[in-house]
Structures are given as C-alpha cells and as structure tokens.
Image 1 (cartoon, rainbow, N blue to C red):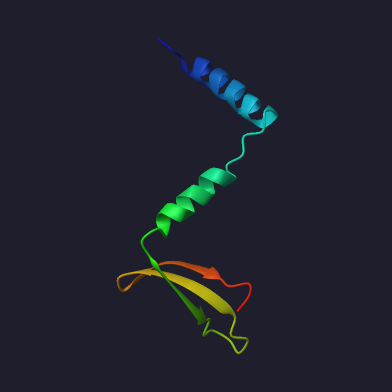
Image 2: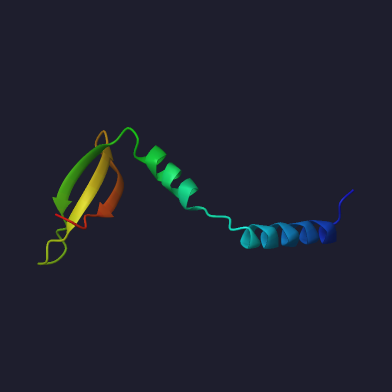
Length: 74
C-alpha cells in the first residue's frame, strides 16, 4: 500500500522529469480550443463598450455565445 510520502516522491520525480525533458502543453490547449469551437459559427463584430470599437470574433452555437476572442486585424 502506498503512503502519502510515496505519492509525494513520485509526484516530485514526475514534475522534475517533465520540466527537464520539456513538457509543452500548447498543442493540448490548441486541440481543446478547436474542439470547443468545432461546430460553431464565426461572426466578426465590434466591442460596444467604448469609443475605440475594437474588433472581436464571436463563436456561437445556436443562439448562445461559446467563445469571444479579440480580432487583431479587423
């Protein structure tokens, strides 16, 4: 049976190994984002909160907003 101490040792070794060998989460984050907006409709709009009117990209599914991101070029 494992103890809490064994768990902490294994967790520490795993964390050190991941940091030494370069564990990058960016591909995983990109895949999750793609799954989140896979079936949505992309609509470009402007932010209504100030006079600057920054561009935004709104992803909707039906009549609900699923994701809103700033549009760098608009």
